[in-house]
Image 1 (tube, rainbow, N blue to C red):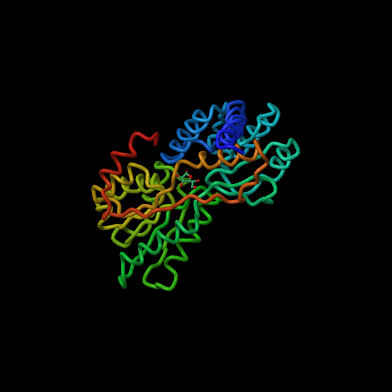
Image 2: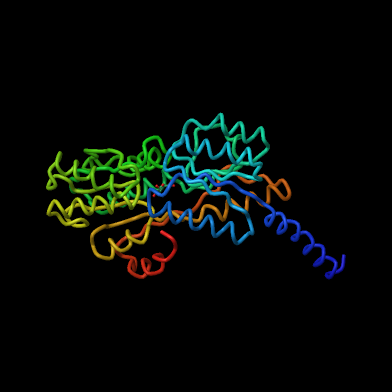
Length: 317
Ligand code: GZL
């Protein structure tokens, strides 16, 4: 074939996919807006859909699984081309995912996983949640050396895959270092408000002087806890070391101001890889890997956190 024919053929080949994307209607069952990171994920998902000319049907579940299941059933009834789900908890999805499969509607999981047969969803776009927890634990090991350190832990939403896996990873990260002990661990439901309330209860129960470090499963709970630590007359980031996950702008700001020590970045752009996989699948049946993994990066006071804050602050968090 001549170059010209090849170019024409390849152009024609792209056209249907582009047309396919423009004709797509995709339902998105979002957990809610419990954290700055979640708000950014929603913003980016809408941007990614708009870039592709996709008609995105958005449903906010206010962190309730029954609302997500209702939304998925509504998307199925509307006959959408595909469904995105950020599953609030890991269990209880088999029935509704079977219904989507029976309707021949592919489902892609965003940022969290489910305890269901992998045949019930096309792919899951998530970070390595265990790795994130391990990096947090290993950072604290490097920070504390041989010093004794009584740790309190703010867990994410009970039963969610990030809460389960980030706890597991952190415990792996500190394993073998008996000078590091988790003395309190409780859910703060990934929110600033609950992070503050639970940290206040930790301070009251343990005595602030007896707490060396806080590990929070997300930055929003850490930011709430920072307020509680200050109100207890202690210096967050100094009297109590703080490590969390997400790398939202306010975490970079807190690190720049010496009130927090480390965070692990979670990209809010899960939708880009998800929509790319869906377009390839719907246009030509290309089956993606069951797990599309996003990167995780550790940020500490050695990074230019003010500059990163300035860059991230307008990204929809
Ligand atoms: C993790 C994601 C978590 C974020 C929180 O993949 O599901 O949910 O870390 C959010 O900020 O609430």
